[in-house]
Image (tube, rainbow, N blue to C red; front, side, top):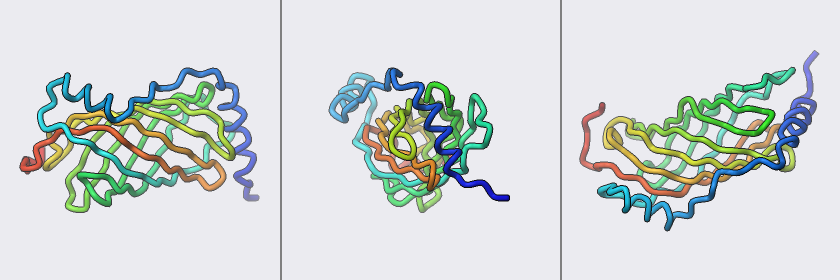
Length: 181
């Protein structure tokens, strides 16, 4: 017998709903991120922005204390264009916090931008609204030595098992670097 995803969504909402008083990741507007880049001496820092859409598997029942979420999707990002996304993160369902294990953005030419993220979520409609701080930590090709930081805001729908988010911040990399490391 196949179970409806609605009980899963309701249970997840109930768990996340217990965390209404959570502190959220401070929102860093792009001017503030640009100032951070300048103060850190990030040579060649430039704005990065875009949108992503992902899909993920439903939360299992009974829900674990920490859920390893694997999301795949597509993004349209400055400096990468249309790119593939792989996100593996651990989500603590009781308090709505998340921390990435793997975040990769793969450009059409194969260059990979790697990142890490930490964030929080709160109940919203049939899912959650979330915020995170993404830190760029290298990659391959022109992103081999990439650095930077961005703010992510978005929503996840537990009925459709999809999420959408925007990303805005700064990135520094050598566009001529083809080291592939």
